[in-house]
Amino acid sequence: MRLFNASRLCQAICFATLSFTASASEQPDADSLVGNTYLGGHLTYFKTDLDRLFTSDSKSAIDGAAGFGGEFGYRITPFYEARLSLSKLNIDTGHKGFDVPSGTSTAFDLLYFPKKANFYFVAGADFLDINHSNLSADLGMGYRHYLSENTALYIEGKSHYQFDDHYVDYSSKIGFVYYFGTKPAPIKHAKKVAAQPTNKAVSAPKDSDADGVFDANDQCSNTPMTDKVDANGCTIFTEQQETINLIVNFANNKSDVDEQYLSEIARVAEFMKQYSHVDLTINGHTSAVGEAAYNQQLSEKRAQAIVDVLVNNFAIEQSRLTAIGHGEAQLVNEANTPAAHAQNRRIQAKVQTTKKVAIKR
Image (cartoon, rainbow, N blue to C red; front, side, top):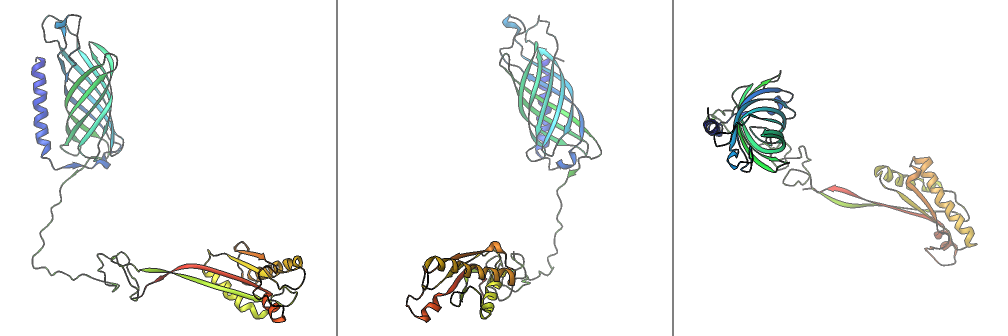
């Protein structure tokens, strides 16, 4: 068979196969192909670079090459497949009188299936021996049609760039593959949906938690009936400030905590247990009576005394508490009277946090 006829035959088969596959609705299950190997055979046609010459004679220009070959492939993932192919080529110079030897193509390609289905891209390296062997980079695309669980036809087109001589060749291929392995490639068929009886009663939409949003659209089931909800059936929250204050007074020149304040300290401890992320700073103060340096030490002792009660009596973590003494620097009453002095002998603490509160209907 002349080269012209072989190329025409290859092109005709490719066109017929493309027409058939364009109307095919079946798709392979790519996951079941992973780990499987296959063998195949193919017909190929190369349209060679116009600058290729077999000899220095311009009449020895190589017009193209057609041939056949085989291949071995392995499915790596649902998206990727590796393939080694060997092809024997009959080369045509377009003019009689030149004894042109046969050529070969040895290609290692990586196939990428972007939708894990029939269509794929292909790229790789090709040792293309047309007159002499050179390494080429190839890039192209193809389409695979599955005939059964183990067999498939494919068509493919590629361009080849030869590094040494900067030739650009083009090839088309049609082939057949057969899968081996314990996991066949089942074909997915379109599911037929049975027609529903026209006289079937339509059930009313449900609102299981009675929040005004039907179950089909409710993203938060079992919301309390008293809560206001959004369009997705979820409770709407607002933020509120939660604050607690502590004031403890001390006897003159003393840092002992009087028992009458234990209930107030207990209330602060419960607040801190409820909001475990909250820390507390305790500020100690004295009156203006006495030396300032002594009052500073006394204020620190008073603040530390409250820390000790919270830690020892109510099991609050030491790391969450800070004691600071201010001495006589922050008087609340500057009068020089016994009542004013008693008011100034104190500790003060304030803790505040933000909490989410459900908005009610």
